[in-house]
Length: 169
Ligand SMILES: [Zn+2]
Image (cartoon, rainbow, N blue to C red; front, side):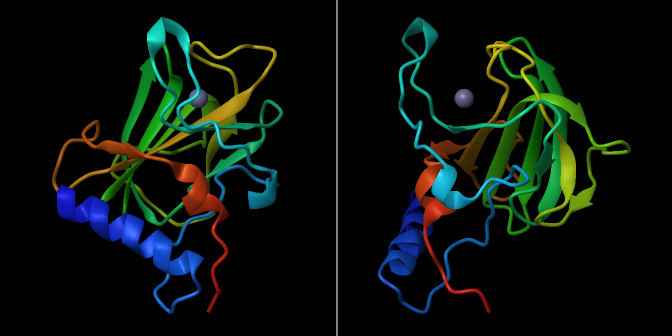
């Protein structure tokens, strides 16, 4: 676990100083939103003294939600807080990507399916405990170990990973 964290953050730092090592290949998971439009909402206070360990990406209801990375759908889950959610594992197994407050899943989406970065997996909504007036995607990245459970992992701030400029090959 400790080693996984060091390597991911190390990769991001490398990319920031322009070294050859690429950052994780990740995109903003809402169609039409550029990295420069994102607002860092990591650690903002929430109800019950909880800290916000994710990024909120506001967009109109029904805006396509995209897979942020290549990987596999681990779990489709409905919860009181998160509403309609998706847990996706990255192709290398080291990250869990969590998408919440969705309006709907892409038709035919199922646990175990492989998804490619940029593929539509659902739509933005305000399900769960989201403010109905402010539909948004709640997007979380958890560092984990290959083979661990779909809910296991340590949250890392998605903002620097989504906004770090890196060369595209
Ligand atoms: Zn949120």
